Every structure is written in C-alpha cells, then in structure tokens.
Image (cartoon, rainbow, N blue to C red; front, side, top):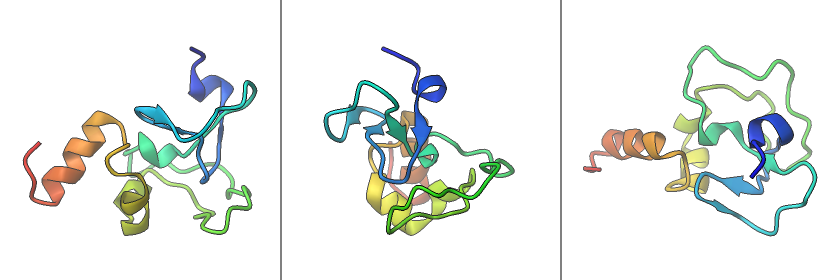
Length: 94
C-alpha cells in the first residue's frame, strides 16, 4: 500500500479514514483529511484549502479534530490514539 501522506492529497471529502476507505479509492491521488491524524496545535496547512467541498474548513490546522462538526463526521475513524483522546474528553473509557 502506498503512503497516503506522500502520494495522496488533502481534501475535506476524504476517500480514506484511519481504518477503511469510504468508497472505492482511485488508483491515483487518494484524498485524506489531515484532521484524522494531526493534533499538533501549532501546525497549519500552508495555504487555504480550495477543495471546493461545501463544508470545507478553508484553514486547516492541527486543532481541527476538536471541532464538533469534524468529530461528528469522523469519530470513530480517527487514528486510534485520537479516538482514545476524544473518548477521554467526552468522559468515556477507552
């Protein structure tokens, strides 16, 4: 399997979540939302996103996983350590 971070590109309407594909993934340029595995609060995408999705966040940061709409969209498909963190913040045991 190719490394998504090297061969993929960012898009809010992601093809890939941590543990599964959301649909048939094209052979070229699968898309991933960095909120699925990025938690560094000082990280941000260098340029505003222009993916064109209706729910695009435009400014993509390492804090996006904390946004209610992002958690609602992807939980429990974040990376495992992020799912545990989200569950702890919600008061659930993991």
